[in-house]
Image (tube, rainbow, N blue to C red; front, side, top):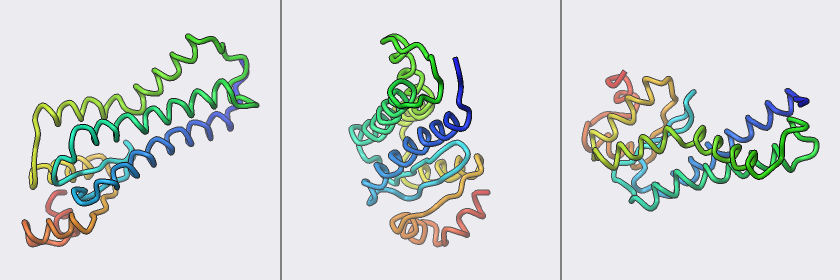
Length: 167
């Protein structure tokens, strides 16, 4: 096997970037319910005031994961020159690469989604959990217009004041 380190680095960076950008764009589709989104070392997270629906949340989980898995498969097995040359290109190796991609990109989000379906939170509790998780992981949090209005209505604070009280 021959590894082209720089090409592999850029391929992995594009792989993660594609997944996270698709996740965020799909999250923006439910913008009426979107309170805030955060970007941090553990990726991008979206926090909703109301549950957007199981079908939408499942699509937000699976669409970026499948897209990223197909990108990784193309990059490793179809692109020329490949970042890793002489990689076994059988069906089993490709299925294994897709499976590993799905687990790495969406495994934790799938567990968190299952937790949210089993123990749902609404309104203030949902927002506080999402923001405190973002703050704990060192994420930068961006409030939407709906989120800012919710903070003014329920807590009588600005986003900056809310973030200071959560920290």
